[in-house]
Amino acid sequence: MPFEVFAQIVATTLAHGVQLYAHVNGDAAIDQLIDAVERAGATAAGDARTVAIHSQFQRPDHLPAYLRLGITPSYFTNHTYFWGDVHRANVGEEKAAFISPMKSALEAGLRVSNHSDFPVTALDPLFMASTAMNRTTRTGHTLGPGERVGAYQALQALTTGPAHQLFEEDRKGMIKVGLLADLVVLDADPLTAAPGTVQDIKVLETIKEGVTVYRRP
Image (cartoon, rainbow, N blue to C red; front, side):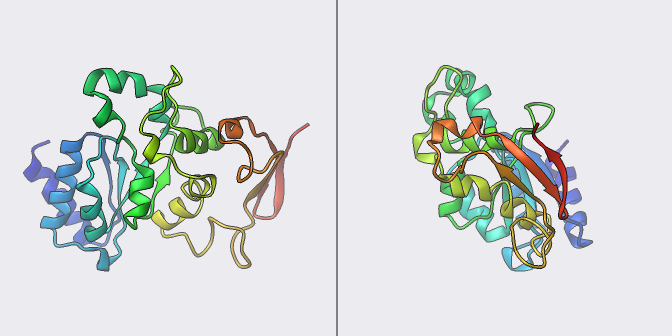
């Protein structure tokens, strides 16, 4: 759509207090989201928590703009594995290495989440954590080693990060008195497991609101 149409949609949405989720994959689309939110007069102080979906081909200069405007990225680090080699061939190593820059975003002070874009890639949170931690492509190349995060940060992007983006941090996202008892029991500790083995950790039990809904045979 023309930018003026998009900008009007953004302005109307934010003016009515409706949370905005924008699918912005390329850097030009990210530029347009930033420009539209800025034109609408929104800032981080307003706590609208505008979510940039994918935010894949991000540039370093986008991060301070996100922080200033209160835009929060939902990354798709599985891109690094499934399409990392294709991106390297298409846009070169430097640009490809900064896709889904989770570490830089966290260091800039942003709250982030991670997603699988199901059914584009499988609903496999531990694989998603692994791609955030390892950024390994199909051919075994490490794409953007400086953007790898630790296990705790990778897990936050699947728990407290999305809860915050959904304005649900007061009811879910962590194991805490007063919050929903939604949790899993794993057969290994992702915080101490070797980064290359996190995707192989198995779920032994799933508990939803305090009730076991799955138990591995």
